[in-house]
Length: 503
Image 1 (tube, rainbow, N blue to C red):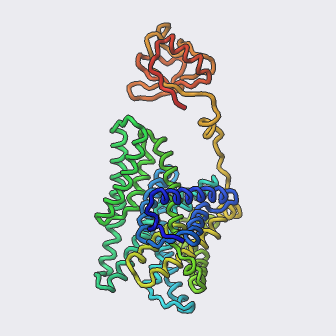
Image 2 (image 1 turned 90 degrees about the vertical axis):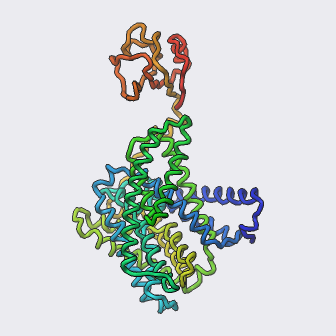
Image 3 (image 1 turned 90 degrees about the horizontal axis):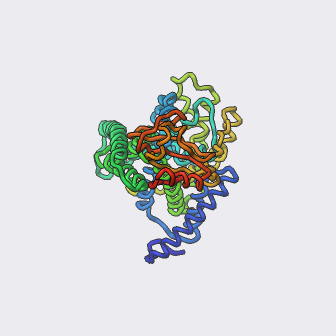
């Protein structure tokens, strides 16, 4: 065993990091083949290295990495969520993300307070409620990755509802955790009152929502107006927006997590320059942060303590109560006003309350604040999370099929082929005088067989042309052809010198 702090040599540090990432990616491939949550395997990689090879004990660093990762994950989830899909289930999703989280925490906290003494733990009600609050929200990374990786289609608009809930309920859980940490810290000389707690809640959620909307609108305006020559820099600019929105909102006592999620929602549902490049970048970096976050959480866990008989027993009992009682009751209470949802839909929503890295990250807050029983909270939350991923994470598709709510989303036959297999290539040119010398309509322009002008850009406006479309000098044409050599000959005849080629 050797400690991470002993790896002064940067090359050694990078080597270990590369090995961890490589093993995690292979583990994810294995998980996909056996229909298991890939994120559980990433956590397992961290556990293996932490128990057998590395010594790592820094909740502060883990909390920081988790905070950064969660910002990116929530922002990316917001970008991928379409308003048109969530609008019909907006009320249900928001209710689950707020009332559902609070009800889950209250039910689970009361249960832990009652049963903990029989297992040998004397926990005050605030401590029990803090433990429950850390694991009261469903995990967006787990839900997004499982539903999208499996291309799981769900009837009754359940998928957008679940993604909306999981993407927007972390801020509510975060507020509960911070409130309780502050309250318990008040016993050491701090100030706390019910009025201040209520004010903090309103300020956190209100500022988070408002600033998230403002930063989202500003980001759309800036990115569309800035006109950067290097398209890759748009992704860097947007990443800066994510971190600025989170940190600025948090500094003025707003909820940074809510701000980045809403900013992502606004940005993803507006026209954006180089949107495909930005989306691809965030897809990749989101997976990177998910892997790093789960590995670090695995490294931090002390298996000897987490798997001790009493901690394991409390974690399993509390976890089963959460899965079978607290979550279903909270869901059914939250959805009482919404009569359109069938009983099967409510059962499925109750079951797909996956817990993942977020509860474990939230469990580092009491640890860093040196709250009483903080390490116990961390270990119990870890056990409950593993239980949730094993039971619920592996049965997302099975449960949907059993309830008659599932259908397989059709995958595109062209999505991968456009990059790897199709011989056709796109080129962009400007209309020259020679090109329209025989007539200015598109059907008068001689082009090779199997060649199409698929789009025209004129003074910033884009449209799909027809044969009778009249062309103008300096119109930009997007041409698709699998006769590239013949096309180049025509370009020379037309005096086209500036050719942009891409797939």
